Image (cartoon, rainbow, N blue to C red; front, side, top):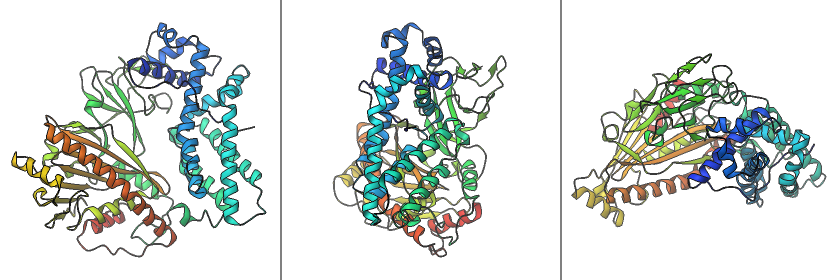
Length: 552
């Protein structure tokens, strides 16, 4: 059986404007209905019930139910083309990295979710829908096979092992990906072991190309920084427990402007449904049906409505989490609000809000400057944090668009493991940036540039133009995701807003420049286990390593 892979849809709708957003909302609901009922039993009534729209709206966007089903398949096809085929094809000249990237993207939860995979299987397995699948996706199946064959051929040429059969290797690799997708389709997201799936793919390639796909070449962790030991099997579980005791950024209250608005967020292994209730209060619930453990609302969806509904069982909850009929109440999660920012903190523990108290960041109202950015890093999250503390939290640290003429001050909180770095903006190097600081200082603004590390994984950067919130979380074995979002003070004037955009631009540039350095550090640690900690006593880096040894 050939792999069921998508193709680019010629009429993928834009997502801008109310009409296109409503069309996309119907497509998203149609994908959910296909996941639950299959093509033949999916009806317009079932789709609009999930979308919380009227039946007549379907005719406005689609000529028929069949057209809506095809549009949903085309949307998934275009998504696969954009998020997998195009990025991997652009990396063909470096086949090792291209294969590693292919595994990461193909098994990404945003793309390879049980909900989306089941749609591919539904069209493929139902005879009446199979022709639509071939018309939309058939030619792209060949493109994907050709891409894998091309990469395998390059790998064989690099290895010098001319006896290897490129066709057989390609078929085996595609079959492995297919089997993994089949397994995902019949599981709940919480039960899927994606790191194990990636490890199987890496093991397949390593068994054929041992030199090109050694642990060192692929960035698989062999040692925790500063520990000098190979991590045990319970390390991932202990990491989740550590993050579960620590405040983690979720959203901003402005992301949910009206009662009934909601977003699904996954953070530190917890699926959270954030809702603004009828009274206007933003609250968080465990994003799980009380009848069976599937997600009630799947990220990255944004929506609204007068209640919360289970798309599978038809159970209904009020916006305050109380169930109607047979539905048990949803489990509420404690949210912390700091200047409009929302943090999840399931229980008291290491780090958290303490890093905000006593400073302007905890008292000023903040408004989002952007929708946030996420950067993938091929390194374990402690490696990312160690680089931040080593490069950003020392008296010699700089803000990238201006050198500091006098040493910055850096302090460490031994109890929490957090650190505070402050530089006087008036001493920044010459140039337009320094001029901006001087102007703000003359107007009575705070010209200091402050970085706060809140253990174990947050950096808060406060400057005259606003605030940047930076976090890193594990994504898979040997990889992590860095999230960054910028904020401006409520009521900021035009000069402060301009400064905020400048700081945001430079922060993203700084992160982009640091990624290759962090990944190089990970490869070095993977190739040879690190010796014991050599961080200076009393430094932020030494405090972080001490925290890890205690908590892990």
